[in-house]
Amino acid sequence: MKSRNIRLVVILATVTLILLVINQFYWIQKDSVFQENLIEIQEKNQKQSKELFDTKVTLALVNVRDRLLSLSNESPELYLDPVKQITDEYFVASFYDTLNPDLLRNLLVEEFKAYNIKKVFEYGIYDCFTDSIIFDQYVDLSQDKNSSFEHSSIIEKWDHDGHYFGVYFPKEKTYLSEKAAFPRSLFLSTFAILLTMIIMGYAIIVILRQKKLSEVKTDFINNMTHELKTPIATIKLSSDVLLNSSSNNNSERIKQFASIIKTENNRLESQVEKVLQVAKLEENKIELSLKKLDLHKIITSAAKVHQVVVQQLEGYVSCDLEAENFMIYADEVHITNIIHNIIDNGIKYSKEQPLISIFTENDKNGISISISDDGIGMTNEQMSHVFEKFYRVPKGSVHDVKGFGIGLFYVKYVIEQHKGKVSVESKKNEGSTFTIWLPTV
Image 1 (tube, rainbow, N blue to C red):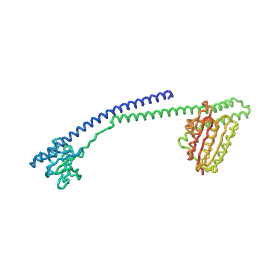
Image 2 (image 1 turned 135 degrees about the horizontal axis):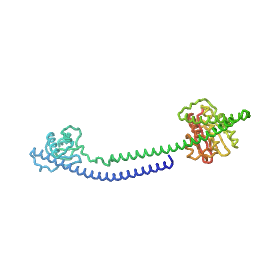
Image 3 (image 1 turned 180 degrees about the vertical axis):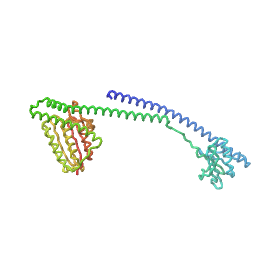
Image 4 (image 1 turned 135 degrees about the vertical axis):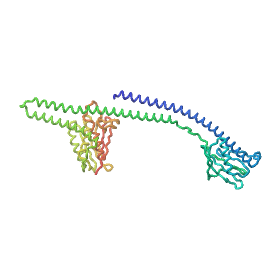
């Protein structure tokens, strides 16, 4: 996908998400106003319902008391104390005579049903002689039930001279059902929007990663084509010369072109091997042959090999090996390769006269190797990708630095397999320093 199309997709996705969030915010605000109005209406209705309920209970208890008075041939006018509501759930009625619990229960049930009071209630009888509640029982009238059962709790006493009976409604609490509840539809829509945002964000990340992978793949193919075309062209030219030569030609010349063909063939084999090496790294197929090694000896040998190339460019490779313990347990081939790779990298990305310095010291049960150059350096962005597969720091034109971008990827992999660490510090146009830490024996 082209960069222009990707930018268009990202912009459209961002605008869509913003519109969804604005729309959701609008409906949340609107629903908030609706919820406030609904709560206000619920509070008003609940208050009216409670007042109506209290009135019906009061009237029912007045009727019960009057019927009890009529049974005892007493006049209601003799009672100055009316039915009184002590709390939101507790009602009492005075009665100056002893009461039969079963009779009181039957009268309460009849009157409550007459007023359509279908609640669970507790009734008790107070005896002024013993100053205690002498009877306490629950009655369930909910769902057309008419059952009673004893209860061990004691109803709160009323400061009153004489007998009285009380009724308590334990479930008659004042509360708002579903107060400030979040509507299920609004919750689902919010969840859907969040899920959409996550999916779209993930899709954008995948698109950007695919774009980067495509660019890396294209760069790798271009580099590989360039690396392979040169030896193939050289081999073709040498082969043509040999084919067109007569049998009387100088044998030394034939040997020269044969040597060129062999050298270029080895170069092709090396390039193919590097590509195959990446596949082995990805599949973790590299096997390490661990043994005790002298790391200073490996570094010195690698420095000598590269010193020849560096001297031709009027540069130098310096070694300052100060580590006292330089024995490691590692694979000789791979450790040698990573030292060569980093030195070779320093030479490739150096200026006209490469200056490579190698320093070692012991640190935290291991040895630290620092390989520095005075090359073109890297930005912070480039440093964050330098150990990625196929990544190559640009140095001008596309093919001015040879390689596939797998050297430092290989370095990092091998170091980690040896339970070590590798890092880089660099400044643009000031050079780079690669630091390797490996555990010592």
